[in-house]
Amino acid sequence: MADIFDLKRGDSPLLLSQPHPGILLKDGMQAQLTDAALQLPDTDWHIPELYQEIADDLSATIITARYSRYVADLNRDPSGQSLYPGQSVTGLCPVDLFDDAPIYRDGQTPSDTEVNDRRQEFWQPYHDALQAEVDRLHAKFGYVLVYDCHSIRSIVPRFFEGILPDLNLGTADNCSADPDLVSKLGDVLEIGQHSYIINGRFKGGYITRHYGAPDRHIHAVQMEIAQSAYMEESHPFAYDEAKASSLQPTLKHLLTAMLDWGRQTYDHR
Image 1: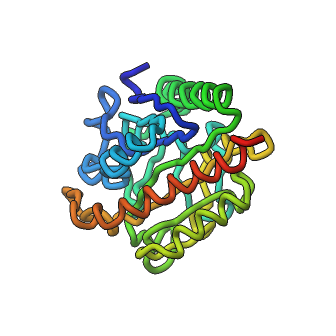
Image 2: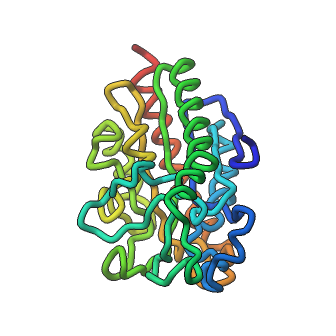
């Protein structure tokens, strides 16, 4: 379903998933949302623009959601199970903003039936396509490198204390990717100019944990970027070309390091 997501196939084992940059709403939702929610403040703004040239240079496959996470959050477990037990989280069809304000006007929150319908209409097609691309690349190369692209405001007290590091790499505590690959990515982050942490507050969501299977040569990582590193964090959420240009070399080095590791690990077996 091309109206749910955009898919651009590349010719390398690198697969970029972009589940949260979408800004479209399901028909009728505009009237249900609060004025604050209609600004879509929790969007992973400008992620496609940030990565596009890098992905093209590396012949990566890119799958990008077109609909807002307020319709259905593609990085949540479809069963509703929390990915961070004991911590504040938002759900498959979130009802509150990251600042805890309501997304919906009084009496307009989606019913269980509506949540299930959205899972089928919006969540499932994205994951069907993502799985198909993982399978295609695995059949072609014998391994897959999944990089899940995210961003978030640098200060969100609901989810973490203080200011978020610029670059937050998650590998489900090295369960979703080979520790040697994670070490190589850590080396890139260490020599870069941006603050970083590995497996801090953001260890990876559903996509990283579900698709990462190192024993099957499928390695998945999540990159959560603090939006202060490449854009304005307040409405209208403008892209900052200067900041982005400073950040993009590190992002390209990370993705290149993934490809180099994959070739060195698998291509000569």
